[in-house]
Image 1 (tube, rainbow, N blue to C red):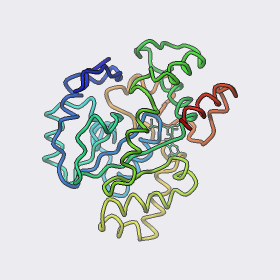
Image 2 (tube, rainbow, N blue to C red):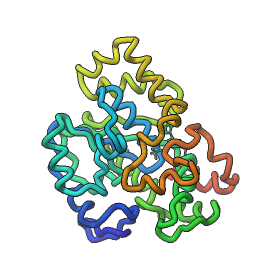
Image 3 (cartoon, rainbow, N blue to C red):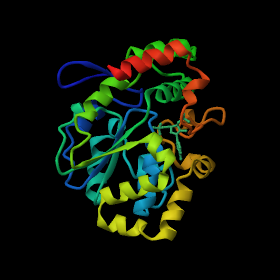
Image 4 (cartoon, rainbow, N blue to C red):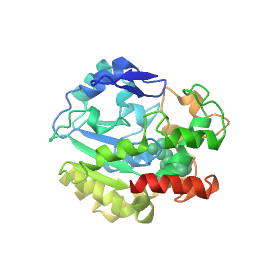
Length: 275
Ligand code: A3P
């Protein structure tokens, strides 16, 4: 679906989003200390949400962690957001909408997850292939998908536009930037960084080595793949686990772009990244 932004531009979103939810999300009065986990799709959002959940000791409720503990801003009604805000302190949310669509609030915390665009492109391709209801793309080839990605015509528009806007805030005090590739190399450091950013209580919790190891184990790719239905989105659950595949916990490696991208395609993305 296309929504119209405040500046009158068309913005592409998945079919479970709506103009009403979009308007409610970008105008929502987030509270002090609320936490928004923000990313371009396929950047490690679900992994990060699970780490935050484990640090905070949140129970998994029936359904999924994504919807029950971290309302997805672009597809949540205002009533749902109000309820969540009034029953959770701090309240956590997640979104793929770029930061310039919101009025960033100095007191709200933002965790921005960033991943290299070549892996994002390939991951987004696999994700998109599992859905039959996505915009112009329907079970096409990677070459077709690549052209859409490189010209910013996927859901959530351009990866590069998203990253450019967020990078203007990368050094803000209330923004924690996490790189997927760093999280892979040293997951414990990422856990510690997130806990420190969330506040003293959480930092103290992960300073206990036993707690740290439990979180480390439970957020591992192996463990998350075994319990995947706890992590997927409720609205799209029936389509997300299609043919036993779950695109939010798929391969989880750095450099998987090599499995599909040609050298020429990789160079195009590298050039765009440099620009
Ligand atoms: P791949 O498709 O490359 O495997 P998002 O949650 O933003 O949609 O991101 C999904 C990507 O994160 C997928 O990448 C998925 O496999 C990867 N991922 C999910 N859980 C992970 C984990 N515990 N460790 C590493 N990568 C993980």
